[in-house]
Image (cartoon, rainbow, N blue to C red; front, side):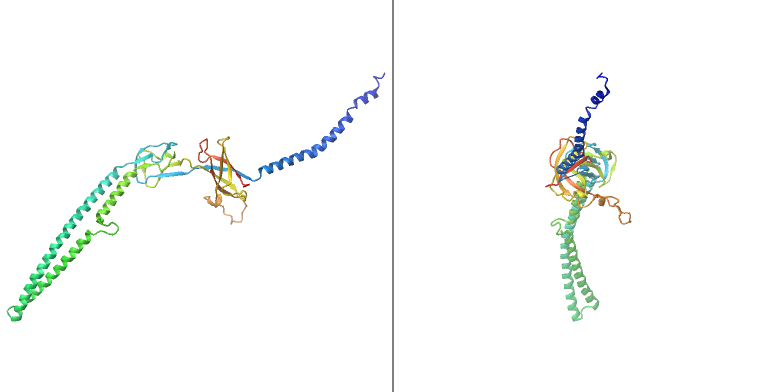
Length: 353
């Protein structure tokens, strides 16, 4: 009878209810207040740990690049390098046809010989002017004697006026010839003299020697060599048979050991940034690679100022945009992986010090 009593069953099924209510009452305040407190504590911890650093992922590896041009014009007859080849300073890159410049050296040698012959001729001419001067003196003496004799006869009335005037004219001509001989000697001496720029050397010979030195230099420059150590880039412009113009870039050498990071920080990140602060660099290409560095310099103008088409904010449609300032980050340790110019990087600068 008791088992069939419905009141007993009702009481038995309702026994757990009083136990669950206290648990729910305790869990509710924990969720309401505990979780926000944990979130606030986590935010505070993150804020305290992340304070004193600024970072940017708008950063790229930069390297010194040397654009090599030909010093002389001509046709390429030899190419000694290829793309991505490592070279040392002094290694041959390419060679220009040297034959025209060898001919120029021969022409310069001929010009030196011609100038030497001219100098020898002028020396002989100068020596000859001494004889001309002496001959002019002798003519003056002879004409003067004839004039004196004619004058004495004229005073006695034993000669004619015409003969006297002829003797007088002969003296004047002899004196004019003497002055001409003196001028010729001075001119020959002046041609043999040297200026203060090249003392002791005739200017014609000095000019021919300078011409030869230039021809030899041009001949030497037909072999273009690497000015620095590095890796060859853009070597596709070097083709045998191609004409090269003087000063036209022919190939680029990416210099070895000269890598740095150009990080473009927001202008709002620069308040506490100083030169010399330590930095950490990560690379997208090498996820596990971290390199230590420091702030080497802070740019003097924003990226928009150096762009090809800078923004014009005077048209009335101005919208304020946070500017980026290039910051140069020097790498302080040797990288275990090759740093390639243009690789993306992420830079974090410690601004707490």
